Length: 255
Image 1 (spheres, rainbow, N blue to C red):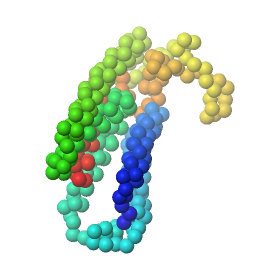
Image 2 (image 1 turned 180 degrees about the vertical axis):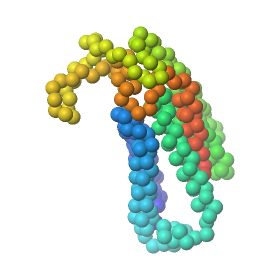
Image 3 (image 1 turned 90 degrees about the vertical axis):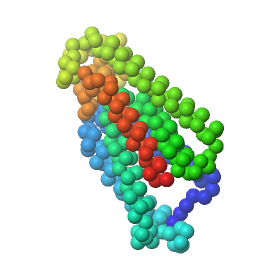
Image 4 (image 1 turned 60 degrees about the vertical axis):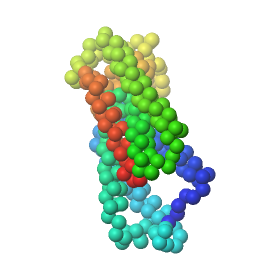
């Protein structure tokens, strides 16, 4: 089994993890905004996740000779370590619940706010739990001031969401929209639309609403799979905080 033992290799793995963790939420959010149902997207995500785990287990998990200290993947399958298996399964359950919750939270709250709150909660709760699980081997005077900064980030992100909700409400107040269906009359104006070329179909120029305008918000609501007009802002925040709690329990369960 291949294990990263150098600090340089660990740093490279961390950078790759940050790249991938910052990419997949944007891609899934883009799919939802284009009308793909979240359950279909999550099904694709889980199948790909399973395939990736199997491939990694059969490749990196089988590199080198199997020893007592470093058993290979197939060797570990026959070991009597059900306690570790159950903890790993519990970590997978809370991780899946967190991922599923964020799919809906992104639609209600927005990608930037959800990621800040959920990631900060993961650091605050997860780091605190891991600190005690690791026998307090880390220096608390260095560790917890950083945790406090993430706690401040949670509060600031919640305030940003409240500000965004008020801004959207002000922009949409002058538009005839049915809050239940999200349907309304969209009026085009040169000041709120930018003329772009339809690169996908190769046709002539088309008009797309400028990002952040009322026209853009209405067109997005009509196209997306999760309708958010007329919904309470607390729905998105509740989903976000629930996802943060789930993510924070994932690391201690594996630890």
